[in-house]
Amino acid sequence: MTATQNAATLTDTTLEVDNLVVDVLTESGWATVVDGVSFSVRRGETLGIVGESGSGKSVTCLSIAGLMPPKQTRVRADTLRLLDHDLTRLSPKEMSDVRGPTISMIFQEPMSSLNPAFTVGDQIAEVLRRHEGASRRESKRRAVELLDRVGVPSPARRATQYPFEFSGGMRQRVMIAIALACNPDVIVADEPTTALDVTVQAQILELLREIQREHGMSVIFITHDLGVVADICDRVLVMYAGQIVESAGLDELFEDPRHPYMEGLLAAMPRMDNPSEALASIPGHPPRVGAMPEGCRFHPRCRYAAEACTGGPTPPLELVAAHHTTRCLRHAELTLKGNP
Image (cartoon, rainbow, N blue to C red; front, side, top):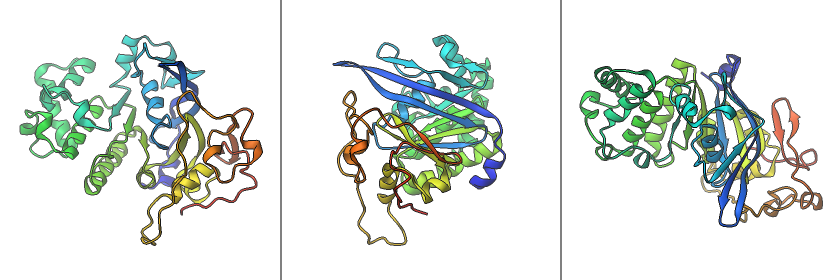
């Protein structure tokens, strides 16, 4: 199913986030790491969230799922709604009941997410016993079925093995099986293919697409790899320094970027049609937490920055086309290069 075909079937909003702010406790006090993030995810949609490390991608989704450490984190939002759940009003126990049946996560490094002391079958079965009240016999049977569903060979035998006995790609399939155990409405995939080789990465992406087609679930795909975004996403949010700086449908974002940061990310992508061309890079580094520049947060690294970009409040997100927003003051006068 193409992104266009998929978009035509999207009607219901599964997740709605409005003005999400996340503060973390540092040695110097509280610092804002996610600042005013707003977006929605529709049923059956794959939403990509891209940006450099430290841009706030993972913190945004961990905060939505209630997985940030409570004593070191403050999370607030005007709206944080997952289907009929108001996540801002849920207790930790109620949030724990939502995770699994309604929202689940696939983490980047399965070796640090899977418990080395328990077999993979037991770890999948635990989810089924916790959220669905399945018996020990029934949960083990379904764990084998889930391993088979995600393409693990000899699932009955492999269910009795420990995470260290699996390859990186197979461990990631186990993580997907755990995420799918209760047929959630939303899956958050936090860079699930980063540590995998290209062949295994393609297999994992195809598996996620196939599962999504079967169950109609929404997927939030966090990554810094624009090649993966182009392969799997319908719509994309671009984050920088804790803010969304651009959002649009996949094709429009790649062909007609309206923020210099997105232009820089596209220019840094390797191109098969000209492999000898030197890769571009974005100069400088993202700002440190608690030391955000005034004005546009990207202006110290932006070759288009003007005086108006360097002071005052952060530019607002502006609608520049249908379903296309940008946080650039000069978007109307710049012609940025895309990567069709």
